[in-house]
Length: 190
View 1: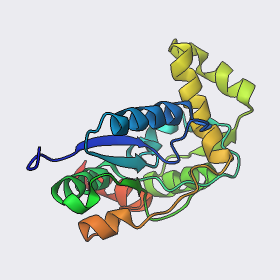
View 2: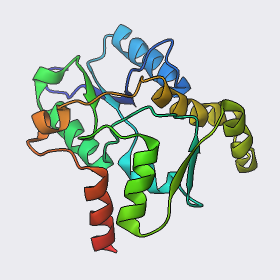
View 3: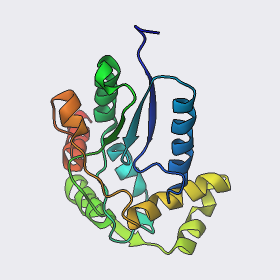
């Protein structure tokens, strides 16, 4: 076991037994189980993915009960870079690392950035919890999945996702990608 890398676990920010975001609860229990097993573990607790932000506005409206809560979306490429660095350096064995982007944004700000950078009109509609469940019914997803989607927004509204870390810069030597930078890279690659 000496030369083996630890197990890498990806979870969500503020994973806890009582997290608002239901998948955060699941991730917390997974972390606890792996640690209790005696396995070497590095847990990455990621913010929401920058890569998904354009998809939140499929019809030009980001819908969810996020209110004015803020979060720091992170690029999956940055998470991958952190994962490699954490697995290759034994000093991170047993640690839990928050992985975020460089700036805290509200969903209204995400919509404005998407509008500015893509030229496509995007707005944010702050749904009630009831509206959020109703608007997701047409997807036909199982209840647990819909609850996960809705509670993602609720975790933003409660402030549980309002975290900025220096993990990307500290472990990789490069700054995390911003939403604007991500969108510009996508447009130049197209």
